[in-house]
Amino acid sequence: MALRACGLIIFRRCLISTVDKPKIEFLLLQASDGIHHWTPPKGHVEPGENDLETALRETQEEAGIAADQLTIIEGFRRELRYVAWEKPKTVIYWLAEVKDYNVEIRLSREHQAYRWLGLDEACQLAQFKEMKAALQEGHRFLCSTAS
Image (cartoon, rainbow, N blue to C red; front, side):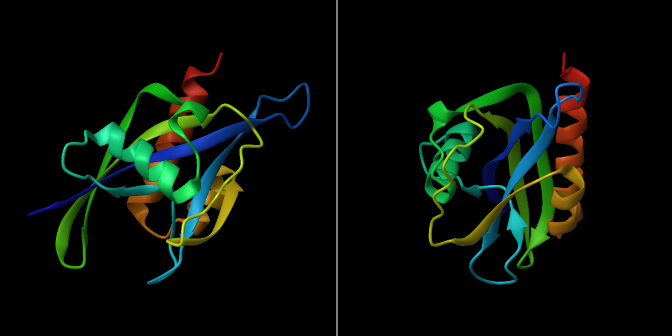
């Protein structure tokens, strides 16, 4: 049976100057165990939850960001499929923007650090090609829908 997890690719927009378009920064969390990999908040679906409910719960648990502090971006949903611990795994991500640029991040014991990173830096820390691709696709999506 395939493992299933859901999460949010959380971002914020910061103005570098008044003439620039906002720079997009992604939130990545560093795992406390294993290879200490960097990913957005995510976790396994619990009985009775739908996928988006799981993503919102996991974000609250792992980063301390509540659903009402986020805006889910319509039209972006990505399924990443890969093999983890010799089992097929699917992780579904949505894009979510924090409403407050300076939102407080409160990490769970599952993570030891967090960073807000531009696309290039985020892709360097994300060790898995599927995660890098999801970040790049999310960035392209945001840039193509920016007004």
